[in-house]
Image (tube, rainbow, N blue to C red):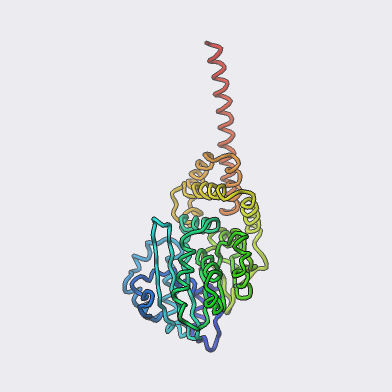
Length: 390
């Protein structure tokens, strides 16, 4: 079964006039913003460039060797640009208003571009996070606290769409999906009235008060939400719109990679509900999150990712393929956590990294706990013996 790259080969010869914009097109446009287009796509108000021209410029600038240095899933995103440039459907699509703002001091990471489609609409594409552990932590953090990228998404939408009249689609994958919903909901009424569709591809959710805003409720009829069958990121916190569950060729957290999402024709291959593992994770993390305050949530996130970062892996792929040394490093870190936290971490790790890894972690943690208990008793006995000698 194919993915969205196969879709470009299957349907790329059909113009948008012959075959209208669909949910797979929405994901492709959302993922275009993952491509590093600095110096290639013009900035705000500086002109525009076709997909074909952008592809030519990108591959002149970056060699295969340079691109191969990125081991996260976004290293494959230039393939979307390359394949789209070969199709009648997208080669003449225009790209403009590119921004890529990174300010560590402000904890700001925001990138977006505007896609001008031949059907008379524009698509605002907002970049998400990659599968690095740091990027995954950002998806968790954005669910629990306001981040500068949210305000930047609203500002960007206002700036690039303030003078137009054409219908607007807006979307993103991962953090980009969250930001797309946030920006659409808080856009000025004149812009919000032009938004015809919001695409959220496995983006983290929001707290309950935000979802009760009138402007958020107004998006109900135009929201399109998609998550993989074992979603981890897209089930965080609350959402107003029920998702479409997509079949994935990957397992566990690696399903967040949109390249693994299965496509049939102009639609995703779907499931009726989350997988059993996805349901367990959803219940485990969201039930627990509902029971703790914001400060405890942040402590939990920091503890959880300190365990994931313990082996020195940079990406989820590295972590899942790390073998026994990875488990040993994670187990050692787990032993340093508070008992109550450690128990919850262990449960989540079982779900995320498949049953064999969870069992190994459980055995290692149990063995460590047994050793510590025995060692403690031994120490106590030795102290009593020493006291008798005195």
